[in-house]
Length: 254
Image 1: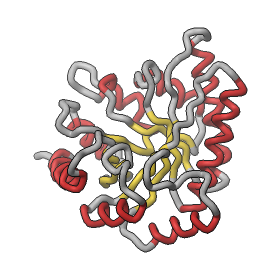
Image 2: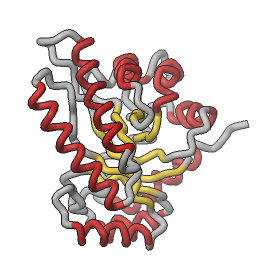
Image 3: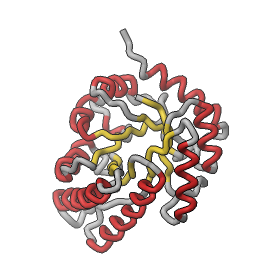
Image 4: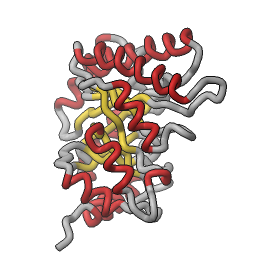
């Protein structure tokens, strides 16, 4: 299990060179580039720019792990879902061209005007189409456990079951709704076979991270946990301290 970071939000004001240089210096293994941040790596960049991004990461110890899109597929409007799918395909092409492993997407709630089962089916159908598209390009699709109702683990698990695609998984998001009677074990059991990525937030906020990390280790999770925290006036110092606490929390206890 390795530590990386999302550019949301500690890294949001760093350009790509600063991100790579600082993460390498601070011992972070990977990065998820969130859309809209100063790094500027978006589907709109040219083929030459994509090649430069790929080559720069290839020269570094930091892996370009994924892209954090804002794509979401819960709308009851088929035209809106088609728009979101087409946008996501552009992210997948970018990931392929720059060597990223995954594209993060999300649900963002359950529209009240349609049955829950309909929304779950709509999201799942979108994920399956994107799973097929990504599979042909070596890019995985990761659904973030996100949204007012859709972040509830049993809803996210229902979406994963309905999608039922080998190239589609979920991104654990360390939400308060994961915690039942002080433990994340019940929620983890629902989602463990789908977890392809993991977002972790403030490590001192009371969330049971030591338990989560132990569960990930027991599940033979050999991917990344990505810092996704509020911006800091001292980002390098924050990331240094964050790594120290992460190291302690994921250490196996006797």
